[in-house]
Length: 377
Ligand code: ADP
Ligand code: MN
Ligand code: MN
Ligand code: MN
Image (tube, rainbow, N blue to C red; front, side, top):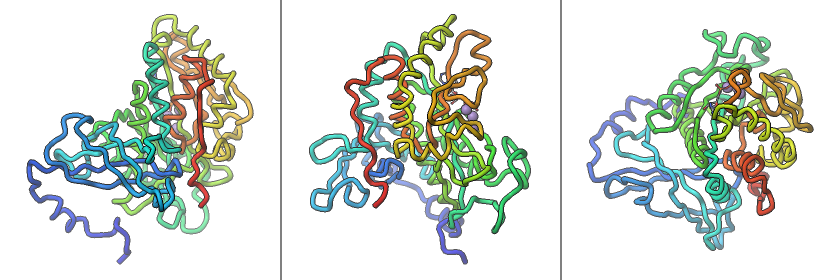
């Protein structure tokens, strides 16, 4: 018998998960981001009663020396609940709780990019910034090779896989379907899924979300994805170029609009926004992956439906540009734009903050950023 959790007998598990839960006891799974800026961590506690709002959830703590966030001698990190979802795994009144992380001085930790994003979204409130993110990802076997690919060698060249159907075209639909339903159950604003260009690569979309909600919902959707994959005994990677060569990379296209852009005649505000984005290309690239552009440089080559990392470009229906104006938006003269640069492993708080700073606030002067420090040790 294969010894991994996906291979354990789920009928046995079910016998326990079926047990009646005391009505005054709620299981809350707190979820947060570790020091790598990519890794999610979680732990559970029992609450005495059903929390009606996020304000009723207690602060908590954990050992930051085990998450690349603190030294052992001063290791207590604070978890501050900021967003609550229904738990699709435990169901009932049980909750998933998304948290911001603070250190012992009550300062946001290096990878708590939500704190500053939230301030920026507050300042831009009157513009009503909406976002929709297309999260691309790849399903791997536990040995790190793509799920469904031949043991040695490669599947046939790209072409038949995007939005494909059939056992020879798409690999791992069970996981995609389970994740989609689990997100809906949880209350994530997931709005679609599709099979991607590289086999075993998929996408889900979340949106439209207002301001800070984009990061909250995308991070929890990522958590649910990893958790679903765990049940199936497979692994999800958000690496932006998991297979080098003639295989598409993975991005996090970020669709964006303001109130003005969505109204009649919004196209002139769209053009203004693109002009402003063009001035800050370097800043955006620095923030669009956790390694200040290094990850994205493997992906943004100018091939495989990407723009080159070195230059800003935009165009109607152009999937080889930094910013695409969807055809329908150009025709209707209003709507939204698509920033195709963010890497699949980007932090959505950094991406949405950067877009709002450039296009609404036009102000980067008080911006402070530290790269995740837990990457290499
Ligand atoms: P693509 O054609 O690039 O594959 P998708 O259909 O995958 O596009 O994703 C479109 C995304 O755009 C969704 O996340 C959706 O929520 C988002 N979106 C749609 N309208 C708006 C809008 N007005 N402002 C911001 N985002 C939007
Ligand atoms: Mn898409
Ligand atoms: Mn896609
Ligand atoms: Mn897209």
